[in-house]
Length: 317
Image (cartoon, rainbow, N blue to C red; front, top):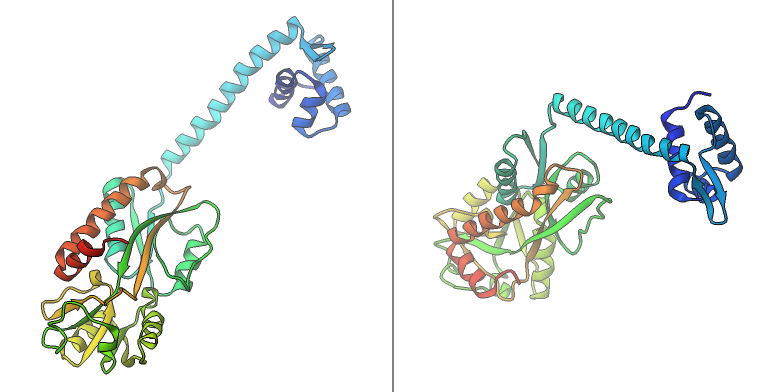
């Protein structure tokens, strides 16, 4: 038999356990098999490595010599493996950091923050329009960091190794033209909007369509969806006409001809969270990324007077 590194590991296991039976349990082999293997190793090395004691086994002088040199050899071998892997990784181009989430400015903030914190990594941003699409992405290893809208009816079960941190709780306002009869109200009750025509942008991840219907029905009416499937630009044109209103998150709308009005009691809201894979390069810098995103979100609040007033009064409660 030729002594190999694995045999040295066996000797060290017995020495560290202080008992052949305990070493056999740790190595998950039969005690008789370990005893036979140890005997063959001792024959190859020229003599006994252990003597039996009442407590188990103790090292002989030869055993002390072998275990000391074995630890050094195994340490050098592990170092060889680690440095070789690092060198190999450095020679391969790093894969891009994948940022994903719903349409809207928050994903763009995350992408900018990742770029700033990890300036030497390429980046890809992938936007999802449905919960099924986003959930499938989060259950795979095809993303690094994502914005996750958390709604009561949509709580995806995330796999092990995926972490979540809260970002903000975002209210939905009503967008209407500056010429709309209700535009001069500081705050609106949903019941005041019973006769309005609504435009619903084609964006499933907002969760607004089902939430708005339920809230309106609780207020005593069914919303009149007259325009559906519109992109944001088309929705804004319809709103500017003065005949249509829309429920939206205030950070998504910025137009001089459109005003945002909060709803009494804030019946429509969503939580935005930051989720990432622990194996991703963002894991070590996630606190820095989150801080930059929150700072960017605050700047968006400051751009909307109605949202600034709401945030000052009610905050992220």
